[in-house]
Amino acid sequence: MDQCNEGERDGDPRAHARPRQRRRPGPVVGGLSAAEGLLARVVGAQTTAKTDLVVAQSGDISKLDPHLATGVWAIPITFNLYDLLTIRRPDGKLYPGLATEWRLLNPTTWQFRLRPGVKFHNGEPVTSADVKFSIDRTYDPNVKVSSVRTTFPTVDRVETPDALTVVFHTKHPDALMPARLAFYGGHILPKKYFEAVGAEAFNQKPVGCGPLKFVEWVKDERVVFDAYRDYWDGKIDAERVVFRPIPEAAPRIAALLKGEVDLITKVPPDHVDRIAKHPTTKVGRALYAGLYVLAVNSKRPPLDNPKVKQALSLAIDREAIIKELWHGQGIVPSGPIAQGDTHFDSALPPLKSDAALARQRLKESGYKGEEIVFQSTVGLVSNDKPMAEAIVAMWRDIGVTARVEIIEASVRAQMAREKSFKGIFWSDPVSSLGDPDGMMWRLLGPGGFLDYWRHPRFDELGRAAQSSVDEKVRGDAYREMTQIFLEHLPWIPVIQPIESYGLQRYVDWRPHPTQLIELRRFNFKFART
Image 1 (tube, rainbow, N blue to C red):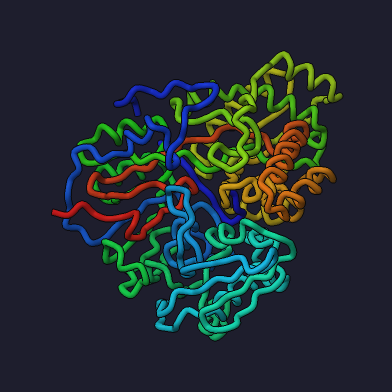
Image 2 (image 1 turned 120 degrees about the vertical axis):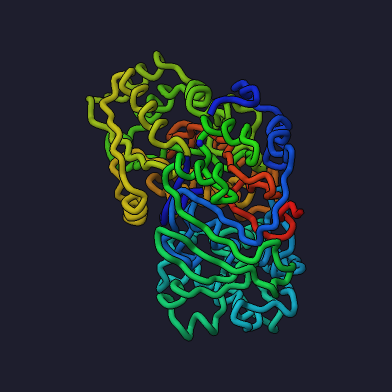
């Protein structure tokens, strides 16, 4: 889910038969194919008397302010510390959160009614003033919240007729407004407390109204929370939750197998069966609601030439990458829209590999041997370094001068803010809305995180789709945008992965397709003795 603050990923042999890579996957239900769903069941479930849940991620957060921290290590934390008006559960459906109901008053006016009696962790009531303050902050030009600035592009103003009513006026019709409020940028902050202590102090001692209450953050060691006993949907089945950063996959897996942690993220595909075979652990999986892509700085030659990017894409043997590096746990994308999204075009064929055609495109482009630098992280997305090395080798085979340059996640974050990448870099865009508006347009549109390329017709279609409530009009726009995308390749799709998590068998938890670690009563509990 690409954001510019931080990142991650990382995952033996096969207890289950390897899923065979197919040109077009079978149906996916609730984020998992039928075969994957079988793997998510608890086999020989064990019980525990534990009251603390320990989660190990592949990196530490950089901030606790949810409008500034939208990286893959922050999102599992902020979505439990704070709450939102609406909630998208792992089944992909939208549910009431802090808002109990919402309705469209007219084509450009949405009204939300807040849940009465909800309190922040410091005891202050959650009111419409807090909602207005929080949403206004996401597009206030005086606040550096670039990571979420494109979350609410349609909002014109927010009104608060009373303490429990919020009215959103949009610049044009926006059928996706309830869905926008369920993802990052939609976190509700306590206005009074925030203004009293200031942004810096708030980041050090945050207050939310989610199921977890902040206790302490020891950088590069742990972030600790207590369960919020007065949470509106009930206290979760734990007293304390600890997030630990363990960057390397091997120590993270060892900690799980030794019982030191209860849940780990970013299990490398070649370690999945080791966890599944272990007598005390199991594997949870979800088809990622997004793509792993090669983001391209299309402003830098020779990457400003569409035929060069077409050659790079054609040179990538995605099926080999999925088979060898992902053990079959992934899908070859067909374009910029992930499977599972509204308006995903199942008629489009998977992106093809054709070395001969790649060489032809390269020749047509006038490429003169300029070096293309692939700035890869280690652990930002699962298998990022091995995939980068494999892809660069494929490019060299067609005559491209290319090399991998390893960069730290912090360096990547800075480059993302400055838009200063040398050429190619990893990104993991997620569909935040279950709609192309929440991924392709949000990230590639003007001002988006991956705004390194502009095309007048693409922009015209994106705006038209965003302002229409006619799904046929929107679908037609996205199909044409996809064709423009495939010609110009502002990013190069590589894989839609099946992401794996390791759990103790006594942990009953379902992975979220958007990488959230949902710790609410409907999605988490311990199997008790």
